[in-house]
Length: 604
Image 1: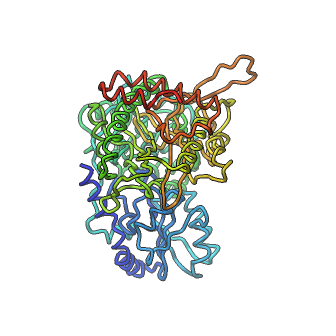
Image 2 (image 1 turned 135 degrees about the horizontal axis):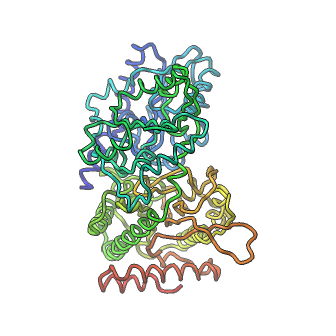
Image 3 (image 1 turned 135 degrees about the vertical axis):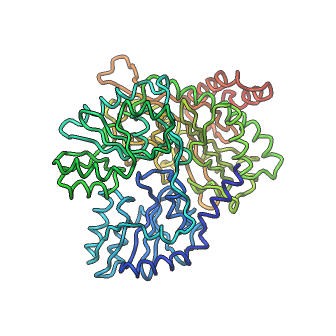
């Protein structure tokens, strides 16, 4: 299965075709009297994982990452990526055609200001950009004396002759015992949250799935049904889904909750609602600028802000948390079986990144509960691990030799979503590897042990995961943690532990705890568990306090731990965690696997 997936991906995301495809695009733009075009990696919902039919950036440039934008002008082109993809992008795109630009240093807007000629007309697809994105880029174009032009059709689509069809994944009902709350109750909560507004346009499929207690199969790795909904403050909502996705049972259940309509009815209904002067809330993070502009033009009152269901969804109820813990236990046993297998297979030599990823997926599938991987496994040996979001393909597949191997992976189970990273030594690690690994582990443990007052955000906690590295003059270019959904996205907002994480952390939120360190061209280290925000009882506390419950269960690599760097409290936490791992997972393992786990989790 892996081999065919990687081969088909290579064929679609082919950087060697960049020059020919950009030439064809420029010819198309000239016929449209345009001087440039913006090609973001986006679909109509700003999904992290888009269906193959929406992977325009990959088709045009060869870049396979989950975030990026290409700008094509008549005489130059650039591709903008963040620090996660700084190394990967150069190996995927034709750099003689696309100049790789670090968006953290030079934004797309700044580049447009510096490079657009006066009088230039630059096109964009208003279905693939949010209002804030359009406003920012339009202002930059105006500063350069140029103009940003909304297009009725995406010019890439006219060139992409073998573009895959739009997805028609079947929609299923999500069981109440796992959801923990009925769809009717969720709709009532959303309606109450609208306050002075008349309706909410739901443009985020994660919210759509959560509110209506449904799951779909329109994109890989996340069980999303692509569609929209209009939820009034009072009365029946309208749900815009392709009817071919609905079998009799889910159709009947959803028809009792909402008016079921085809997707092409949305623009008409939105225009009618806005034409009555109604106030409509749009999600700033996912709403297409096309729909916001349509509502404004029809005379509606537009509020672009936060979808209130996003925060509701982030705070898991007791049923969702029970499911998450069950999923982590099951997944931890599968991962530990893999770690036992890897310890033997890697020592023999010849093992490849794809073979290791295949093996881990096999162990997960043997649970009988795996629905999908929660993201493409990051199976990275040596220098490949220095790219935080490296994706192995048949072209890059490396043999796992002496040094470090990083495996970042997760599963989608009906009761929960998992995400876990372990860095493993193959052969005897160097002193530098042990030092860096231990500093990363110290940051990881600091996050797990953190206690903080209610109201604190992830931005205030992020530094805890970096301090041991900072003391040695080191750092890494990604956040310490992201939110995780309940059989939904492995990367869920608005909660995160990051310099940009402004949402206060609340009980029930699930986040990752994953500091790292990357030595460019040599190796990389990351350690990741999932944690749940929980209330903490502290005697004599003057404020309500919170902390984290670690729910991922898998051993760390003791061969990489330099105990001289650890203080007594850090050692005690690691020993207690390993004892918990050993007790929880041993019942699911063979006799040989149990013996290995006992050694792997022995006290430091």
